[in-house]
Every structure is written in structure tokens, then in C-alpha cells.
Image (cartoon, rainbow over all chains, first blue to last red; front, side, top):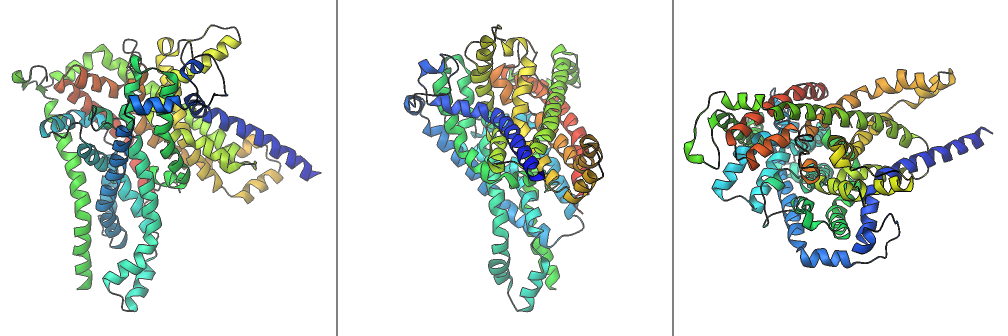
Length: 274
Length: 289
């Protein structure tokens, strides 16, 4: 009897949860559906079944040279993340394994740089970019996004490294392992998962960044976020094509994101919620 | 001996990150502060002169400034209200024993990974468009006349879009907190006949209090900087009806070429963000020990 009631309850909760989830997901779903319609279909009223036409995808690629912003996005997101990791891994490592009295202050200060609103430094960064020729270059954006995400990268790595037990190091030292052996065979294997998670989350953050990418690029170095923003002008307004461009812009990161839900909580709350 | 060696090595390993962040923070902020006291317009850069507090005064007495501050507050509070309340509800729903929990989670979390310009354009064109949007289709179905969202309710429209983007974040963090709730305690309360509402108020809410605080503070930091969503939908209009402080500074810098004015606005934005940041740092700092 009790079992039957709980089964009914489960079905009830399932229906409720799925309804809410589908409503939240609907704008994305409808964009994917619309991208598979012809332009005519796209503006002829509500319709969930497209004709599975790929013409919009072809049009976006041939007319708008889609691969240029796409490759810019890849270079900028991956480049800025790798660069941040190169700087952050030693720093987080040192703070986790040889903490000093000031380590906590340093970490808090790093966090505070993340609180600085981007728009507050728009004027100087814009002028520096104009004068140094960094404007509309991938190099410029890689540098800015690297600096912007560096505090999060250090923090995430620090919270992961801190979980590696110090006793293991002592044991390795007792067995006569050199510093090089220690890093290569003991710490690295334990640190890799944390580094991978950090990498994943920061690629997502850099891919979706839409303030500096719009401010500091025009055509050559514009990644997808800036490219799609240019669709807001009236001449670019074709529903199916906009949907196709949008779908291609979000699909890679959506899939990466599904794999990084846990890291998201940890990374964006600076370890405050695990 | 060995420890001294380790300590200096550690200092060397920390240095690049610290120096880079120091440069990134001190130089641009210092420049912003300096520019904020200059009469400096990119259209006429040769007549740059010392302005004293004029830029601040000008920014402060501009009616658009007060409107943009008000819009910033409404935008932040509106989105927080929707995402925190919605997030608690959805997190509790997903936490129930349901079929396909993993897929439900994935569907709910997805909007967070949609880049801001795409999210805003999807809503602008597919959902809220007065002739081709889904809302218009629904209105027509019920025989009502469609609403021109961005003309009639510009700020509300942006609140809805931004709330859609941040609801997943709130839900995911609150769900993480909820899942660490002691199941036995809940069962005991249930056995004692505590009604669902009092279980929620006395057990669930206090347990989630910390996570809710973190959600509010982190979202506020990001919500103060909302930019792309406004740019691609209303462009701050009609008038200044959907211009927040970030967008007003952008306009001053990039459309009016007023470097001094934009810099003064930037300093005001820093002060606003710092007020929030102090609370966030306390919440996070407590967890560090």
C-alpha cells in the first residue's frame, strides 16, 4: 500500500520536474528546431516540426564566413585558459603545499581583483589597446581574458591541491624520493583531475565572455560572442540563419558544460559551496 | 636548510601570478582614477585639461545617471528574486525521487552555458518578438493582442532574459546544498508529524542559508556588469529606460568619446561593486580556515 502511494508520488513529481525542465530548456530547443527550418517556415507561426533543411547552416558558413569567428573563439578560449594555468599552477601549488602566514591574505586579495567591474577599466584598456596595436587581435584578447580569469584559476587549483594529503609527500621523502620524483610520480597524478576540471570550467567562461570580446574586436579577431552580437542589427535578422549560427556557437560549450556541473559549483563559488 | 630552500622556491612560484594580477589591478585602475579628473574627449584630444571634480559632478547631475542607478538596482534585485525563489523551488523538485533525474538536471542547467548575446537574441527574436515570437503566438491563440515586450517593458524583458540565464546557477548551487541535508533528520521530523511547511522553514531553509547567501553575493557581482544582453536587445532604450550603470559608462566612453566622464562613472561602479564585495569576501573567507 505505502509502496503504491510512493510510486504514484514519484510519477507526480516526475511529471512536475520534467515540465519545469522542459520549459527552462525550451528556448534552446526551439532555436535548434528553428535552425532546421527554411526562412519561410521560421516566420510562419509556431511549429515544432521542422523540414530538417540544412540550408541555414550552409548559408551561415558561406555568407558570413562562420569559421573565422569559430576559430577565433577556440584560440582565445583555449589560449587564455592554458596561459592562465601555466601561471596559476605553480602559484596554487606553492600556496597549498608551502603555506605562509600571508597565504590567506594573498588568496583573498586575488579574489578581490575579480570583484573589479570590467567597465571600470574599459577606458584605460581601450586606450592601451588603441595605442599598442592590440586592438582587434587574438593576442590582445588572450591576454585580457587570461588576466580576468586568473583569480578563479588560482582559487580552483588551490582548493583541489589542498585536498592532496601532505602525509603522502612525507612518506615519499622518507623513501628517498627527490623533489623531481615527488612532483612527477606522487603529486602530478593526484593533481591532474583538479587541473582538468579547472581547464574545463575556464574554457567555458572564456568562450562565453561577451564584454571584452565586443569592446576590443571588430572583424579580424572577433570570436563567436562578438560575431553573434553583430546579428542584432536589422540586416542580419533572419530567423533560421540566426538560429543556425546560435546553435553552432553554443553546442560545443553546452556539451562541455554538461560534463562540468560539479566543477561549476566549486569554481564559481570559490570553494564556498562544494 | 631544506625548508628555507623550499620557502624561497615557493615565493618564486607564487610571484608571476601575484605580479601579473598586481599590474592588471593597479595600472588600469590608476589610469581610470587619473582620467576621471581630466577634461578628455577622444573627438578633441588636444584640449585635454585638468577638470577637478567636474566629471563626477557632471555624471552625478545627469538625469540619466540616477535613472541608470535605479535601473541597475531594479535589474539586480529583480533577477535575484526570481532566481533565488525559483532556484529553491526547482532544486527541491529535482531532489525528489524522480525518473530521469540526470536528464532533468542537464536540461535545467543548460541556459547557463549559452553565451549572453545568443541568449538575448534567442529571447528577442524567437520568444518575445511581437509578430514572430512564441509569446505572440500564445497571445494570438487566446485571441489577445501580442505585447511588444522591448518597447513596452524594456527593463522587465531584460530581467526575464537574465533571470533565465542565472536560474540554473542558483538551482545547481542550492541543489548541491540541499543534497548534503541530513536525510535522517528530515525523516524524524516527518515521523513527528511536522507539516511540510514547518519542515521547510525550520530545517531546509536554515541548512541552505549559507548557499543562498553565496548565490546572492556572487550573482550580484555578475549582475552589476550586465552588458551584452542590453546591447543586443534594447540598446539601453527607449530613452534610458533599460540603461544600467555599465551601459551608461559604455555609452560615455564609446559613443560620446568622453574619456573623463566614463572614467568617473567607472570609479562610481568600483565603489558600488566594492560594497557587495566586502560581504562576499567575508562569506568566502570564513570557509577558508
